[in-house]
Amino acid sequence: MKQGFLHKLFGTTPGKGVQPREAIAYSVTGIGQNFICTIIGSYITVFMTDALLFGAEGVTIGNVSGAVAVAILMLAARVFDAFNDPIMGSVVDKTRTKWGKCRPYLKWMAIPIGICTVLCFLPVFSAQSVFDGSKTMQTFVVIAVIYVVWSVVYTIADVPYWGLSTCLTNDTVVRGNILTVARMACTVGAGVVTVFVPVITGAVTAKFKYTDADLGAIMTDKAAAIADMVASRGISVEEAARSFIGTVRVGSEFANADTLKMVYFICAVVLVVAAIPMFYFGFKNTQERFTSQDEAPSFAHNLKLLFKNNQLLLIVLSGVLGGARMVYSYTGGLYFAKYILQNEGLYGIITLLVVPGGLVASILVPWMSKKFTKKWSYIVVHLFGGVVMAVMYFVGYDAPWKLIVCAIGLVLLGIPQGVNNIITYAMIGDTVDYLEWKTGERGEGICFAMQTLINKIGMAVGAFIGVMSVSIAGIDTRTYTVQNADALWNVLILSGVISMFACAVPMFFYKITEKKQAEMVAEIEARKINK
Image 1 (tube, one colour):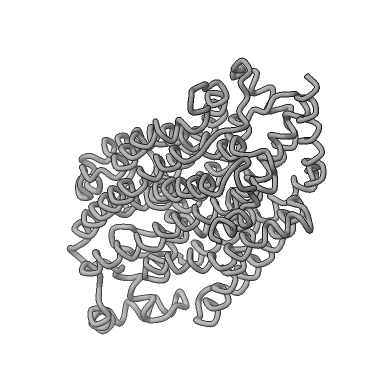
Image 2 (image 1 turned 90 degrees about the horizontal axis):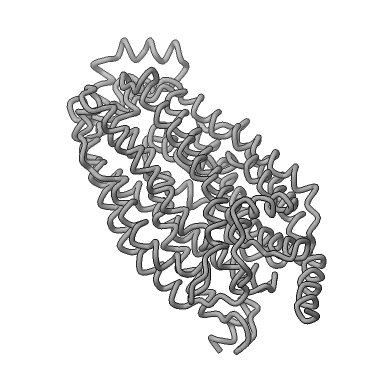
């Protein structure tokens, strides 16, 4: 009964081709991968700005503020990393082992990725030394170098992991089902990290924050200054008081930052220890069936193949234009929860609100793809997402009812997020078949390198906008004071509106339908038989 259900879930045939145990193993690896990806993607910037205090007022690196320097690092390092993906894709296509060309990287890279992840959060430098300038540049350079090394090491496993899906099966329906479950598993892995880490950091550092009683006393003591602020800025008394004194107790700023630094380090170690066995599990329980044994192509040849795959390039362009569509779920959302809503644990709520819509979308993707095609499903849900974010922007956030409306908006935004997470991988898988139909070469590595490139461009843009919002909003990460809360809101939401609409445009020119893909696969098989 259980096997029957799993075969129905994945669309597989008992005893023939890819089996449910492989799809499950593939998904488990995705959970571990997202443990590592999310602790870096969501928290390395906060580690730098809040735990090492690069985001504190007065901290500079070269001629720019610490926050701007971190933003530039995130953008530059991740774009550099993204453009390493085609190189790694070419390496994958050259790989020839008894295990295949994608699977061995799950085995080889699990421990190196784990080590580099832990090193990114190494609690060596004190927040005081960064703030007073004695080790500011030294700390920044060390973290930057480790982060760039991590990004390269991560790429070496990430590209072949997603390329493996095309080696398991060439049936677009089965592959789509496997990717649907895998992306849901990845969402679970990312969700665990985004929900629990801020709850832990918030709880551990609570002793360094002002209590309501403290705030009341300060309101009385600083009544005149707070009244002037209320009159000049049109904010509430409590908002004025927190803006005036911050959230962290005076004298506890460095203890708060150093405690935060250690908590992130411990979280990274725990997640790495949990993730590494998942990589090995995926390696041991999958099998490559559709891997070309032809002579390995050169990188230059792979680039030519890439530019011959015009349908894939449309997906890439769409992904780049959509880089800011989910900035609210990256670092920017954490900063908003931490500094505007005054509760970093609410970042977990923000990310959880997206989950119901994402799960519904994930379940409906196979039906939507069959009924409307992947192309039109992708276009419509992103136009819908742009409208939802526009409504959120005009509604605002400065009243309870407005926050409720925005919470509903986040649930609805889970739909384009869920559809994008699954359909993009399936569409790229179809372009692998398209490339083989067009040129006789599959090029899984170089094609799926574009998916990881898209993901990393999104992470780069999300991290850059998120950290830049710290500077734009006038946030001091040492005292937790905020000069312009509206600026943070405007940056996060408007960038998402523009990105949602923009990413839909290239897909109007995408031509691979489900019918066309099946015809291409049939023609490819016929060619092989007639050779």
